[in-house]
Amino acid sequence: MQIPDALVDEMLKAKRVAALTGAGISAESGIPTFRGAGGLWEGYPVEKVATVEGFAEDPALVWRFYDERRVNMRNARPNLAHKILAELEKHYDMWVITQNIDGLHREAGSKNVIELHGNIWRVKCTLCDYHGENRETPLSEIPPKCPKCGALLRPDVVWFGEPVNGVEKAFRIAKESDVFFSIGTSALVHPAASLPFIAKDYGATVVEINPQRTPVSVIADFIIREKATVALDALFRELYKHKK
Image (cartoon, helix red, strand yellow):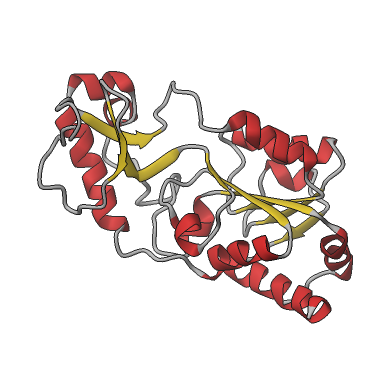
């Protein structure tokens, strides 16, 4: 595919680059999208498995739900798009702001990552200050207990009705970006959906990479109707020609 010369020029001038990523980027690693057929919540009422109230009512049900998701995700690996975003940290003040909970950006090597909705491989105690990582799949104990105090652990993900992680920092990065990418996100879930618009208001060049039209399409300076792997590979190849 052909990357517009004007976009290459903007990237060559840029110092801070940010990317908002959604389910579309991880779909290429085999992880179901939130809204697609076979999506994350299929067969489960959201209020039962993704709210504090649902967890209080039946923690075992919630953990069986997340255990199933974890088993389905355990063989997923970062794809080329994840890896290219990590590689861009060597060339820019590069930040990834993700709505995904799969941890693939960090696994790909990105260090500047804001996981707005948490991480399915992390756990936190419902009573004490314990936070940890748990990659056991399937879980041997449901619901799992805190190794520090014995209380129930919960997935360290953001449930409906809870504040998202790092939103103030994400807003600041959007305001300070020279180029802002919206990649594989429906741009319907707030506050993340507002980030490309904030970036645009503060003078950033906004680039949408998505096979589908979204609300960001209206304000994007460049629109690439391709999968993330294809679009980012083409862009990185063009940049490499100029930077080598």
